[in-house]
Amino acid sequence: LEVNKEDIKAAQSMKMSKSMRKRLVMDAKKIENLCKGITQIANDEDPIGQLVSATELSKKLILHQKTVPIGVLLIIFESRPDCLPQIAALSIKSGNGLLLKGGKEARMSCRFLHKLITQAVEKATKGKVSSGVVSLVETRQEIAQLLSL
Image (cartoon, rainbow, N blue to C red; front, side, top):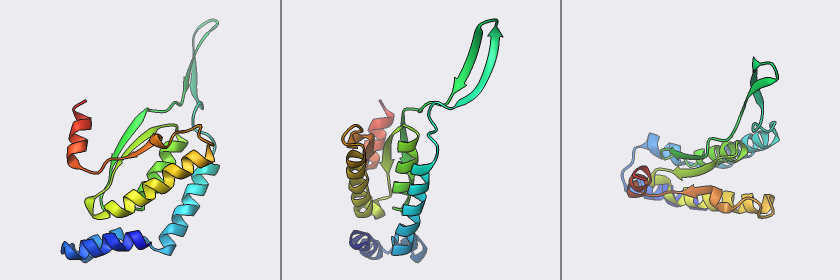
């Protein structure tokens, strides 16, 4: 919460509107709701490898459609740092890598939350899943470079 207060103070000095500053706020209630939501996602059934449909193409040849990870997702969100853990939880649960770009107004909060998540991933998986599965992109120039690949 202390890191988030730094973002809010910076937003005030940037003359950001009250409604925009409100989006930045991370309080105990938001954190509690985040924890509940992430726990729910963690307890959900594994979405990978689920049979979606099966079609018999010919005798002894059945086509199965199963759910698989997409790969790496790039998600750009505004000055709502509470989005970061929600998106990360969904991405990890679905087996996808993730590049996250939050608003510059939430930079400190996003850095803190990113560090917390990546440490938790490594600890929970005993190093089987690298902290690099969730990466933080901070500038528009980095986004432009990624999109030019």
